[in-house]
Image 1: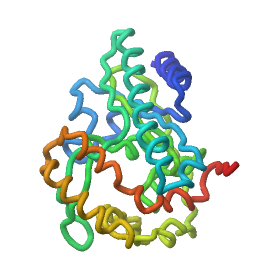
Image 2 (image 1 turned 90 degrees about the vertical axis):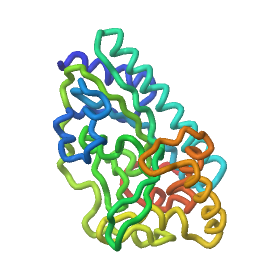
Image 3 (image 1 turned 60 degrees about the vertical axis):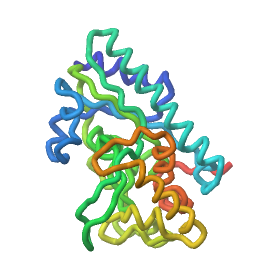
Image 4 (image 1 turned 180 degrees about the vertical axis):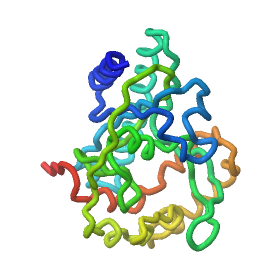
Length: 263
């Protein structure tokens, strides 16, 4: 339904999003069981994915209080509000909507990865893969979503709906340059390798200045987060939010894709 898709995109932009796209649930058939839109909402037909750019000076300041407050917590709350408002927009038109909001790490699970089993933080739904399926960008060598407009410097949100919306075309052009490995080369913890693999725990734990602090933090998270069980302890969830940002976000800072305004 083209008119509803146009309306919800226009409303999303009025609410403050910079990018927005629509992905039909059929595009998620290859997702792991339990993490598909229909696993969260049986009547789901589409996923509306949206993003807000992270201002370059905010990213550039990381690790800092400014990034922690404005680039992470504030944007998450902003995206949560937009998701709920879009849900009300659809509800007013007699469509069901499940607002997911911004990404949060809610589980600590064991996964099979190159080199053996490893612990990994996980949410209830992969927003970056949903954004890829909505035509907003492509997963890059850093394993972050790379958008043509802003590179990896975006925060994402989403909602699931049974509204019959016109889907967006998948992005066909390669976003990452084939000979560019700057994110791999500059990662201070060497958590990204040249096989497009990201070692989440290596990113979280390694680094001379934060290794001791993060080890203590991880132990506190483990106490609150049991495998495959969502932890509702706000402190545990907040601590999990530190994943990938304590290192200084070099994978976001150095990426040449997208507009970079340092003024």
